[in-house]
Image 1 (cartoon, rainbow, N blue to C red):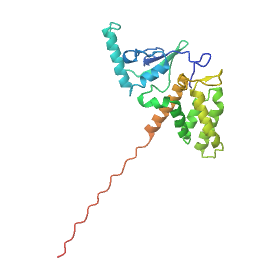
Image 2 (image 1 turned 180 degrees about the horizontal axis):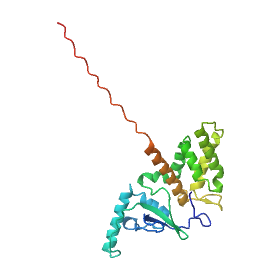
Image 3 (image 1 turned 120 degrees about the vertical axis):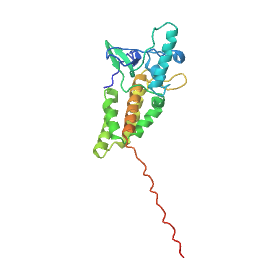
Image 4 (image 1 turned 135 degrees about the vertical axis):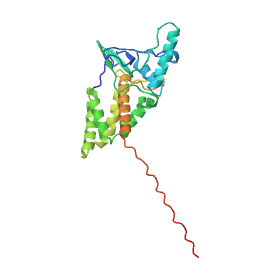
Length: 247
């Protein structure tokens, strides 16, 4: 179940940390916001995501962590370089509990999923994937303002799975579009509209964007991994019969 810790106005109160797997109740934070990333806030989820998406995989991130550790060792800030052998993840503290975000870390190839327009269009492209629609609706049906949208998405997925007629096709596009918009964009009740920055770019509810993007990335990766590999048949070589010489 996806969990949100919200303050008044819908902003996340929790501080997030890039951590290394260890004891379940231990934060085990790693130091990363240095060198080329010194302007980043190591407790802000958006900055952690953008840091991770600067690398192609976890091994590249760990190389950066080693470089930071070497620099800190030379400056006398630490006495030994950590091994960084365990898997990395993103955690936050909720009360006295340490919680881990689902689906791991985003990488360079995942950057496109953190764009509202791409994410919306990608979800619409999965309109005939019953498994995806059912999983999506069940994972994001906790928000009261999304119940109408997730219920229709669920009915569409159910009809696809059962092979029955779906009589709300004309409403599906609007429901999915509204679902992504409400889930991802920041809404300002005072102006009764979605907020933008000084350049007119829409602003995100980053924790919710993270959860939806990582859900989609995880599903896409799993789907691609389970697709059967189609092997091309080797062409049969036909030997030509020797030419007969007539005397």
